[in-house]
Image (cartoon, rainbow, N blue to C red; front, side):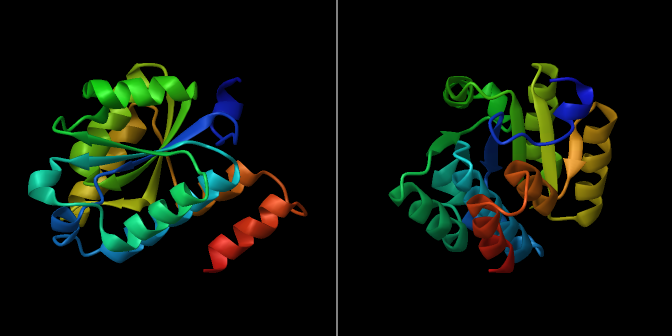
Length: 194
């Protein structure tokens, strides 16, 4: 793929990474619901196109499990055979966690779509390191947040400056499906309208 093609999410090339959408962390976020809904829709779309989903939890003993509304979607997808894998971590940068590196490498995917919390900590560190490692990284801005919206905005600017593609969850979803008039597109419409 060339630079233009890499700028679009390709159904057979991407893995979705959902970072730390956990109860105690989410409690401090004003955008919790929006982020959970967008991340859930991204996960459902990934399942439609058989893309792997990697879900991280930062120090779950302290920050708790995934928030219930997201965990419900992920559990349902896994029960239906979707490729959903979880990684607990203590490193803020997912790519600094050997278990995460192993899971991502095993997917064979070279595009990474990121959703999660907090944009200015774990999301930005992960995105920048993965981009430096040669992955094409897309961050769904509406599926990410920080406690302070100005921190979120600055982190998005920082990622853009190093070549990370900042996009929206719906852009990712429609790029992954690729065309109208298919069964996958009909499933996408159900996800978008839910």
